[in-house]
Image 1 (tube, helix red, strand yellow):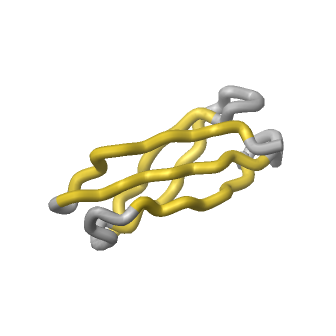
Image 2: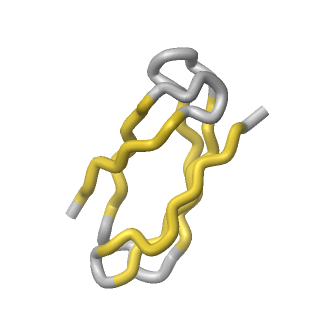
Length: 62
């Protein structure tokens, strides 16, 4: 199952969305997504347990 998760770009603070795959149980997933507004990269880390997001963090990438 895939869930669309909203996050704020850490450069321009505009809302963006990332698809979170809920079947990666207890594994931390690290991805880099470009902002759809300012095109700057954001590092996104998340962990899923029992098909729920238990950890989600967005960090500005330089």
